[in-house]
Image (tube, rainbow, N blue to C red; front, top):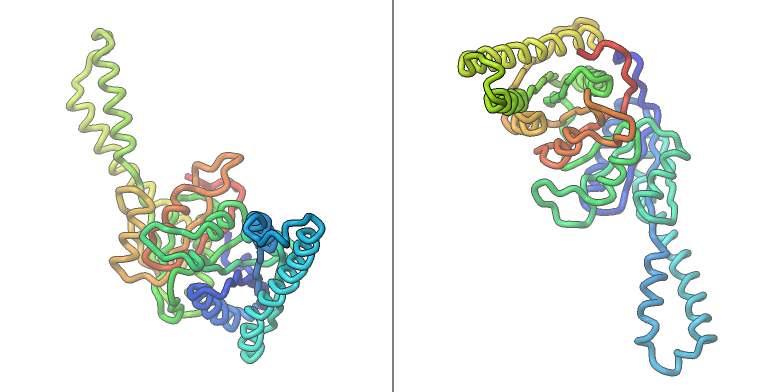
Length: 343
């Protein structure tokens, strides 16, 4: 996938008036100004939740309000006030954003929808047909290591769209962008997106491949024990065999990493070698996050799904854990169908 194939004409901004959503709006403004994108501000409100709470509290009302006809009248009044009031409040959240974006000559539209928040956001996203959704990693909940808000996590799982998950103020200009590569089509899209933004903002590209040799070594160890304990039907020098196996795994997977990064750069970056290459051994999400901390990265790019994708999978474990534990914001690119060159 060449970076020339990727376009961001419309950005969807999920906004709930929390501090982190304000930061997300600032990142959206920067992107829209640079890319010439239009922006749609989205807000979901759940009136039915308040209606349910009103029903629960009915028994606590004074006795003069307990007649069914009075209760029914109160329900109707409450329902009208909640629906109309919450819609107006939602629009009021987005109104200042509209002024800010239009002052920057960016086409902005406000959209609100009643319903369960993450579901309404996805419905709005499908109706609008945007190219990128920007949202905070949490809302009004207190941030903690590894914590992702329920709206963000559910949307990330169920909405197959490029998503920028904002965890703090974003520095695009001259920043450091980390791209996790595994040879999957989604990771190639992540590289393409990173390349576009790196070119626009004169940012550094760091291409990373991580292999987990411990998994292979553990499997071999279990297999070796099974063979030795099977009654001696197989005979070999287990220590020497394990040494050869471990050496082969380490060097082989290191070489695979080099090949994947080189092939990705050739296909997506048109052979441009202006990047830093790193191949690590360990858990992919942990190595990516640790490296991002080490170099003070501004953004990590990762594919939503990886090489082990199967039908029915909505989000890869590496992508989810990178979003959870990354020290910086994360750009998760949508699932891409396998096209043939995965090593």
